[in-house]
Image 1 (cartoon, rainbow, N blue to C red):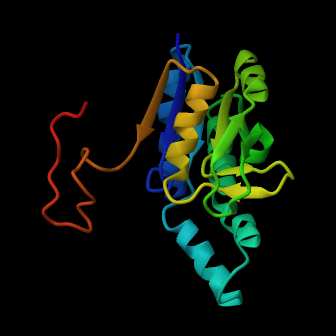
Image 2: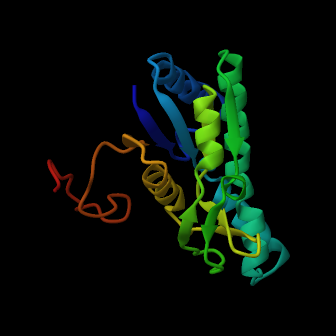
Length: 196
């Protein structure tokens, strides 16, 4: 039995049906006796929608307040996944970055992780729960919500896996491999067969 961190991106949790599919995948690992920590992104397109909403109110949003707004997308997905897991009879508990105590610096919209307190997560895992954590966010020393910038949910997954000494960190995505660059931007991008 392993301690596994799984991170699911925005398209994986893009609608209720996909969230239910993630729950079924997590349930299979949990049924095998693994301790599971799940890190989620916001639903596909949600962070962009929230940024656009902020810019409708302010041409140049205050970065602290922008982080308050854009961190809400992940809160929706963690709550929904826990509900889906509970529907399958699995004890699940959601945590925002602040509830985990993912401590960051105070560089709003592009914060860096300084420390992660894994005590609450370990306690829930030991009680048999699946722990579901909001990616992309943390809190600074003053308790302000911070976000880690684009790709921040992947960063959260890897940092959390290291902090709790997970046996594995699995990052689920909807691409078919690792490319030399973003194939949506550069059509000549090549898929790599192996990487070191």
